[in-house]
Image (cartoon, rainbow, N blue to C red; front, side):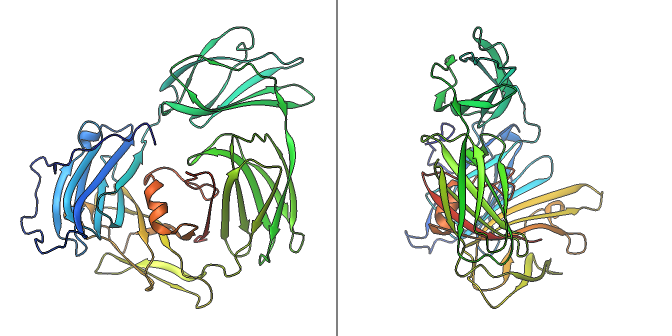
Length: 404
């Protein structure tokens, strides 16, 4: 369990902002309960507004996060929860469940020295430099082979995966430890190990050449820069050289150049990896999504061939009348219709204009365990590039179709 998850109060919270007084009282116990919010970031949570809305956009509660980054509200399942930040960023979960935390993360100005640690590493003959990689930052650590030295990492949790590289003119060797406590000195004692050449096999028939990459990860963070290879049409096999430790989680990412379809799988690190290309790929986009002129609805067209996705991950941006830029990130389950209904936000300065709104990211995805499992580990607001996913759990797989 993440260190930053804490027990939640069951009392609904508020701070005197406008609130609806006619919330439904006819809901059954199965559909009504507490919707919970947990936030992690560098913005003072007390400056973050939270909007709880029913499925028809009725405002149930407008409040702010408490000092611990928590809020909750008694409401029906299936509604919307939106966090509004002072920097004009909005984060919205669609079709929210009750009695399940909704995780948010937002760092407006990450502090690269937020977590001080002490580290000592073994000496490597001929090494000209040493570098520490972690799931919350990387630093040069030359001198740590002589005595413990103090360094600073970014915004870490209480533990992190740590990899140390000893670099010589001839090679680069590594040592790895997972789930390292950052509250005590980090002492590496075992010998460095060489990088290992691994094979990536693409089973199935991609529509074009594939760019494949591998890296070690923790959650949705790279532990070291990814290593890449190109796999030609019909070739099926590529090779990547990287550190491989059985206790590490290894992420393999495939991207078909012609279709912009992505396949990601994660598992304990292994030398040889086989990734199956989807027998039935997700439906591709026929034309770019657009905002409806009068309603907060995004509409798109897609091919009739292919599988329907489980969920949508969307980013919108627009400038208001004062030319202030807003961004809106949304995570929503996919329905049979090619429309995404957004909440009608209760404050005019938060409402996007169809004329000025750009849809800068629109990814439909199918997760191995479905949308609910993805939502349970998603940290909405975290910077997430298209070669990365939330890799909680020992193994997993997600396929998604990206907007070009």
